[in-house]
Image (cartoon, rainbow, N blue to C red; front, top):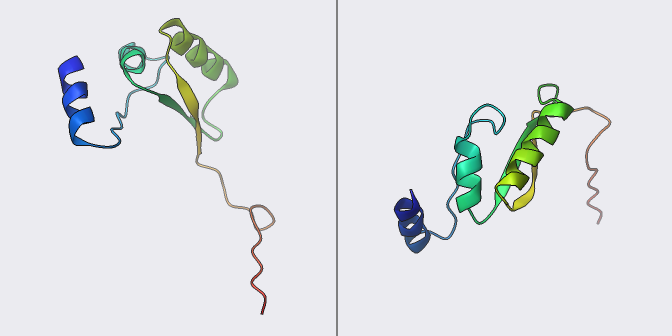
Length: 88
């Protein structure tokens, strides 16, 4: 895997590995330890707080660099979000 990562780094500006949930299997931990950075994907009304804390702890154990969180599945509300006004 190290060789694949090095070849990909030489060919591309950004390489993204989509991995299974951190808490479910160790694959994500192993890849996170080899990657330059890790993003956690959190799904609204699916991801549980306890699982997120466990995932963070598991990633910390392998010294993964957590870059941030992608919040996925948010429902649109008529009253939420950004309001843009384009005037004359």
